[in-house]
Image 1 (cartoon, chains in turn cyan, purple):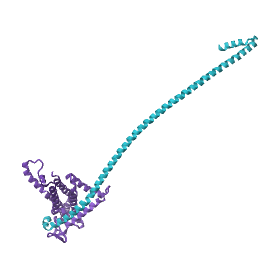
Image 2 (spheres, each protein chain N blue to C red; image 1 turned 30 degrees about the horizontal axis):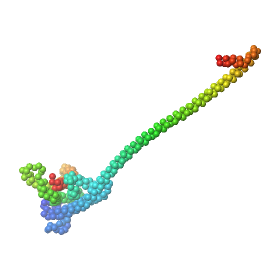
Image 3 (cartoon, one colour; image 1 turned 45 degrees about the horizontal axis):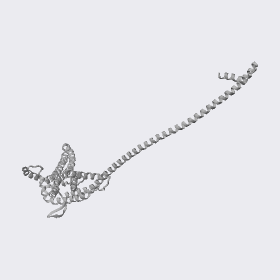
Image 4 (cartoon, rainbow over the protein chains, first blue to last red; image 1 turned 90 degrees about the vertical axis):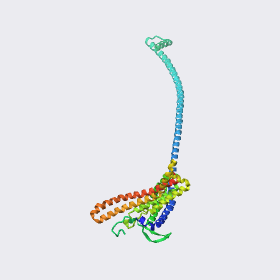
Length: 163
Length: 261
């Protein structure tokens, strides 16, 4: 076993080279390079954590904004509905008054027209009576030769017309 | 040499060979560049190059960055789980330990023999694993006595032990504590050496059987080769597991030193 048979002549150089190389590894790799790697990892973990926190905060803010928007929208919708109802009521009332006014006007016009018609009818009736009486006197005179007075003819026509 | 005698020596791979003359000497011990040292340097440089992938420091990681961050995340999680509060200051040490052992184990498994290089797994030497274990154990002792002083010895008395039992349990716990560096160092060394010997023995079967006759090559060589493929996959697994176990046990021991129980 060379480990034992060569021990006496090689242990010093083995220890020397080991301390040299391990010393290099410890001071250069362990003390200088390793902390840089670890700090990089830590920095990354930190930035990931902070990014996650920021994302979480942004999400909460977005949720809040959405909630606010919803409240606002609900209020706006309510207001709009109220306004629509108001406008509808106002419109209905207005049209009702307009309608009523129009009705009254129409009624008045109608009544006036009816009165005029009745008057015209009356006048026409009177004229018809006069014409009929005249015709009746003429007819009687021509057929019988009897003279009928205008007043008699008028009463006879009136009686005939009014049944 | 093993190859000259026609036999394949499975232990030859653990031989330490000097490359060139000794560079200098420390306390009478000549220090030369060895194959072991070359692989240590290779592991360190490979690890450094690997970590460069993680130096882009982008928020959206590249593939290499992801890979490096997986390893660092794995070790930080291990430390957080096992040391808990106050464990973060040990992350550089545990990470260096884990990655260095992992790279050493994996580099030693590379089939570089195909291109004429001789892979050498320096974690299969208890000199190396022992030093690493002693380092970990020294940290435990220093931190333990620094933080808790003499109270650190209460680590050896489990909670709620009746007084008469303390006299028995204290030495047992103390011995088990003192065995920690040995078990820590030997576990890695044994796992590495066993796997590599097994692979070399099987490889020897393949070569010797194929050289003997086509029949033996078919009867012994082919199944051995198939087995080698499986064992190689297992060795890759062991390479990772042993590095993990070393890091895990070190962090568990440091947990004891930090929090006593």
